[in-house]
Structures are given as structure tokens and as C-alpha cells.
Length: 182
Image (cartoon, rainbow, N blue to C red; front, side, top):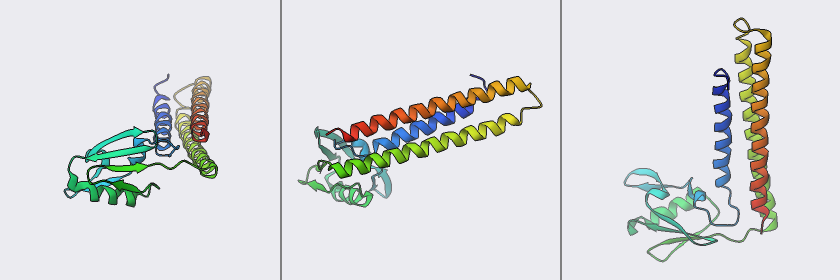
């Protein structure tokens, strides 16, 4: 790949990776520790991810369990989960916190699929904006390179854009299928 195009290709890949990370926060009916990624707990005066104050495990397909390293942190963790509004009420027995994921209704699954498709569309728009920026940058090179070389570079950018958009569509379809699977 041409070094003049590589930075734009890397930006497109980062956009795709960011979308994939966002997909992990979408609840698909199974317990997945990544739904807690947004949860920040007050821990000795600092806001830290919940994964840094306890051990997160999945003892059953629809149950997440958080075993705090210090039992004094249970209230703070529960408060943080409630503030993060992930749609699950935590329960505790004084030693561990359990998050029981309810079975998703058909209506909720369809809403989640719409949300995933919206994330995919946002990623496609971002990729197209990167392509536009690449085209602008390449047009500034018209005095340094021949018209044919410029056309080839623009073709390469377009091919990279098309490839990323196909990857985004595949990822959206896969996540949608995962959500709709009962």
C-alpha cells in the first residue's frame, strides 16, 4: 500500500475497531462482561472501571457475578451499576454482586438490531468522511504526481473504502443475527 494512503487506511480500521467495541456493549441476551465497560466505580477518591475493583465472572449463561476484592466496595459498585443505567438491577448476598440478564423479548431484540444498524451507519459515514479527506489530500499532490498516478491513488482509496464498508456490513449482519437468535 502506498505510504500516502496508509494513514487513511489506518483511520478506517480504527473506525471499524471502535464500532466493534460499541457492539460489545449491546446486550444480546447472554451475560457478557463487556456490558460493564462503561461502569465507573468511586474507589479511594478515583473513578475506576469496575473490573479494577473486583473479579467479574459468568457462572451461568445469563448471570454476571462480581466478586469485589474488598467487601466494603459492594455498595459503591451497586451504586455505579445503577448510575450507568445498563438496564439490569444488581443483587447481592453481602459477598458477591449478581446481575441476572432477563430473556429478551422479540420487541427488544428488534430495537437492539436497529441500534446496531445505526452504529453501522455511523461507522460507514465516518469511513466515507475519511475517504473525502483522503481525496482532498491527494488533490494537493497534483503538482507532484502525474494524472495517472493520482487517479490510481484515488482508486486505491476507493477500493479501501469499499472493503471497509463491506466489513462493516458483515459485522452488522453478524451482530444482528446474534441478537435475533433465541
